Image (cartoon, rainbow, N blue to C red; front, side, top):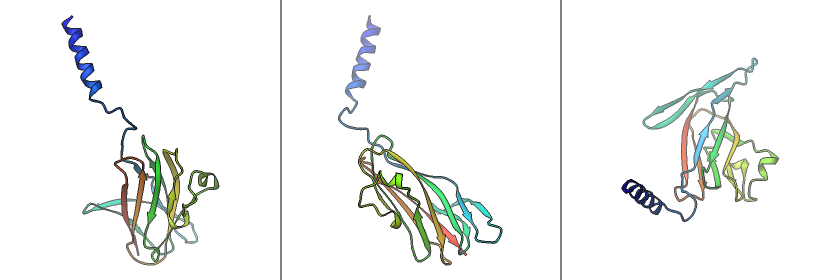
Length: 166
């Protein structure tokens, strides 16, 4: 009998300490596939690029002017809803674009501008995946920043990397 009372008291304390008002609050998550560089040579060769961390900064393997890098970005609001996703970089060095299909555009608000790296989501979407590509225009080491926002109190999440171009 004492055992049942103890178990009941423990369960009551656990349940009363839970927050029951509203959705769970979780930071949104950005994930990337492999980065693949396509070279504009006559053989149409390509390479999978490695990521190196130097002083807590991410660096992508060196590419050449004219190379195209493609990768997929997964955005996940986990238990919350997506509100926006923004990709930015120095457009004088990289020509960056998100390859958004007509079907994908149905999930976006009219204020979205995929050609300039801005996606604003309509309510009700928790996750998405989309291809991103950039073309190296000139020598440099531009920074690419991705920022994902959701309706979570722990939003936004931001990641960035540097692309070396020789």
